[in-house]
Amino acid sequence: MSSMATWAVGILSFLVWKFLNLWFVKILGGILVYLAILFIILFAIFFILRIIKFPQEVLKDLKHPIAANFFAWIFISLAVIVSGVLNVLNPLGWFLWTVDVAKFFYILALIVGLIVPVIVPFMLTISENVDTKHAVWIWYLPPVWIFVLVFAGNFLALHWVWVSFIGYLNIFLMWVAFMLYLLVSALIYYRLKFHPLPAPEVAPSFVIGLAPVGVSVIAINTYYQLINKFHLLPWNMDVVHTLLSIVSTMLYGFGFWWAIITILIIWYYLFKHSLPFTLWWWAFVFPVAAFGIWLKFIALDVWNKFFDWIMFVDWIIVLVLWILVFCKTLIWIYTKKAFMRPKVVK
Image (cartoon, rainbow, N blue to C red):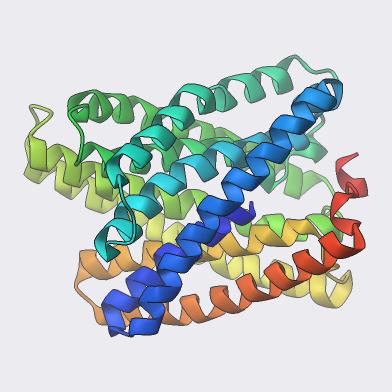
């Protein structure tokens, strides 16, 4: 969670630098992307050691109706590194073998990561312990993962001979992601209507509802750029562009609506139930940053700098969030609270 959140803040910082040309923001973006790479390598080592030492515990997590979805964070982190390397470190000239490193992370994410949207729904389907009350926003992570894999592939395809393969693969993946997103949305809406609100520890996961909107818009727009540049599909590209613009605009509307609902719900938790710090707070950072990146696409679509300024405000908010959660996490690691599983996931 911290790796992909850090990557998202890095990408957003790079976009803010392009908008305002502030040199220190550019440096910050590059540092954050490097830090995200460091995080994913470090945590991958720890996770592999956990698989080796406690395989039964890992299997138990895979069968858990909430914890199973957290596995998607691993592969989302691998895929977003592809975007960070190609779109931040490469333009800055801060990285050698950019395309080769991006290829490695993409292939790893593609081969290993595609088990998530298959295994997790399968395990939840056959499990006798799943209830509608378990349908929280963490369930959005598998479709989010597929959208992230799509736009990572779109960026990489511009630098690779596999462009046709990625182009055809991504159209199938996007359809799976959208359908899975709609199915999960229906379950979560049902859960909200007929069950009490989740425990305060889970409240940050409400913000994850912004993530599918943001990453799907990025996936759609980058996919159009890919197929238009290489003429991969025998379609009328003017019609395709119009259709995708309509879909993107509808997603924009839903995204703003859900942002308002999320703010109201978090506000409600703050004053009615409290909002204790847990590692779930990393769920605040990535979706809010993805929302800011998504605002940049709105600015490009409608040629309006007003949305660039909203993106800038979003960047300030998400940077403060990242610093707060990062410092809190370090304190939790020092006090060993970070290694205690929240009761809500037991």
